[in-house]
Amino acid sequence: MKNINNFAGMKKYKHIFFDLDRTLWDFETNSIQTLNEIFYNLSLDKKIGDFNNFLKIYKPNNEKLWNQYRNGKLKKEILRYKRFEDVLVYFGINDVALAKKIGDDYVYNGPLKKKLFPDTIEILEYLKKKYPLYIITNGFKEVQEVKMKTSDIDKYFQHVFISEDIGWQKPNIEIFNYVLKYVNAKPKDSLIIGDDLKVDILGAKNAGIDGVYFNPKKLDHNEKPAYEINCLIYLQKIL
Image (tube, rainbow, N blue to C red):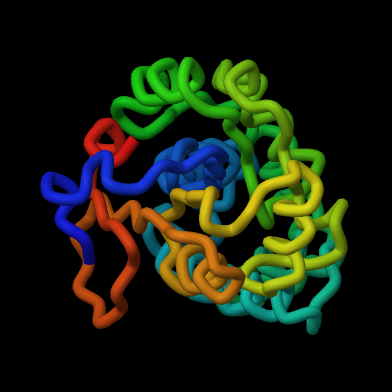
């Protein structure tokens, strides 16, 4: 990892790419709030008990299914409800219609939440004056655009690249090559900021793009991203 205090200003970037979920938009906070509302609105507490019981099973199952989706082994339409169906089955509830209802409510209501990471607006205001900004996201098309508009950050970005539109998902090198070609950018002139080492940072590295690993929880790892920060405002030291 480059020390941001020592390397600030040493390399000139021309194009700045951001991941969206867990980098700017606080996915965990917004997701849990949405799931909690759905859980009690649908009276799932009467069948499952405490919301945390539901969440404990949902989170690892959701991640497992998302990995399958990213690897092309699961269709989006199935993922939308299966992540909830599996949890219901775990608690002895065999109700596909209920799982689909939860899935629909989650996809509709989740993007309406507005919680961003600290300093998101401040750093976007700062960067927009200096660079063209873009989003590269693996999220569902129908929710990512709503998230950005609802949280009022869509105005900062010249283009939003959604894997569903492009046909490849991060960390596949093709999505990065596509984006670079689209904006007429060279890898050495580009920088990506993201929270996922494998999906965002190492994926971009394979395409020759430097990455800023956003690690707010200061998780341990053995990788060597070009830069690492735990607060978005520290981007000012790099850019």
